[in-house]
Amino acid sequence: MGDRYSAEDLAQEVFLRVYSSAAEFQPRGKVSTWIFKIAYNLSLNEISRRKRLCLFADAGGDKEVEPIAPNPSAGEELRETLMDIIRRLPEKQKAALLLRVNEELSYSEIGNILSTSVSSVESLVFRARENLRKMLGGKTGGQ
Amino acid sequence: MDHDEVRANLSAYRDGELNERLREQIALHVRACGACREELREFDRIDSLVRELPEIIAPENFTSEVIAKARAGFAPRPYGLSLPRRVLERFVCLADSVFALFAGYEIQDGTLDEFGDFPPLSLGYAYFQLIGR
Image (cartoon, rainbow over all chains, first blue to last red; front, side, top):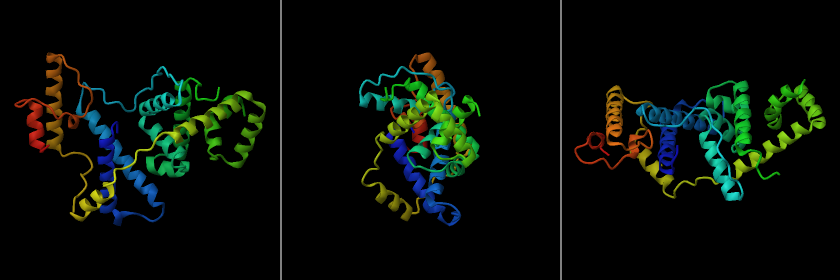
């Protein structure tokens, strides 16, 4: 969401919505997947609200990712560069990558959360990794 | 399966999301192709870096606040905004953008919620008064 306070507000909103919609939960999938789906939808709503709000302002979002000049000479700098790059990824790529890498969800579960097909998830994760690889310029600490 | 086809499937291969036949074909290619092996290693390193990013820990009172709000019947905001609110927000934002053009200051973000310091009697100030912030 761009800042900690907005993220906390949104997280509260997620759990309030989980509480108020608990009766609607279909026990076919995991509870965590359902919660991620609510969180993703609320995040998208907030992002599109921000985009809608200002015609002249730069609200970020799903635009072409432009290369930045990474300076990953130290671990901390590399982390900051990586976070900056991840922030600039298109929303769906970012969500697909983080759900795969951090939450270790399957492509099918991610597809359910993002309301998209398994093949789209495959493409989103691949493009996210490719973007990170290109933008980090191969300086991920392996050379 | 040629090199480009394999490359396009490397990410899914790494995630164990391919069927057995495709997985074997790619494994065979990777054993013989240094570029694909390097790309796989690069994906490994990127994933490790992503996992190592610091997590944001919720504040201590997060759970109690949510429970208190839920108990108090605090309803989550409806998805989207009502039409009058949308019109009002757009109008204020447009007016602010026009003002910014003349006054020569730069709007930093698309979120009016983050502007809390409008001068009294400005449209932005009136807006925040109206929505009770």
